[in-house]
Structure formats: C-alpha cells, structure tokens
Image 1 (tube, rainbow, N blue to C red):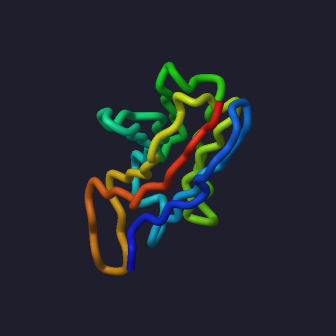
Image 2: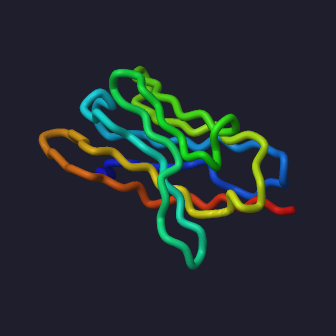
Length: 121
C-alpha cells in the first residue's frame, strides 16, 4: 500500500486555480508535520507550505496570500489550494509527511510520487 498518493495537478492559465490533494495511508494524525514541496525543472526542491498537527502553518514568501494548506482529518487528506497561479509556479509538487503509520508499518520522512502543475502565460 502506497503511503502518500497525490492528485490534482494539471495545466492552467495564469491567474487560475488548482487544488492538490494528498491521501495518507492510515491516520493523518500520525504525522506531526506535513508539507508540500515543489521542484521546477533544473532547480532544487523547495518548501511551499507546512502544516503541523497542532494547526500551525508556514508558507514560502513566494506563495503567501495565494496558497492555502489544510488537513482533513476525517478524509486523511492534506490539500493545497492554489489561487492566482503564475507561470513561475510551474513545477512538480510533492507531498511530504514526517511519519506515516500504514497498517503495522512505520515510515519516516515519506514522499509522494509528485504531481505536475503547469501554468501557462
């Protein structure tokens, strides 16, 4: 069973919106910190937003006011609502969890497979 499964990427025009989802195997509450990262072609992976179990959130300066990270404990899902998208937001977006408990298996620093977001100008 895959620990993190992302969806929601796609192609959108500048100014548009997309919502990414990351379904967690097991109980999302097992993770203290969950985050979205992105990696543009030829660049290093960078942190986009972080959410803690206690409800704290942190955003990269480049996405503040445009992106919102949220957890749905009932659906074991981490989401990233992206509004006012810009061409420079184009990247592969990855979900990350500091801990996932899937059945009897404990995994640490877990990454999803990534989902492509492309913003056209």
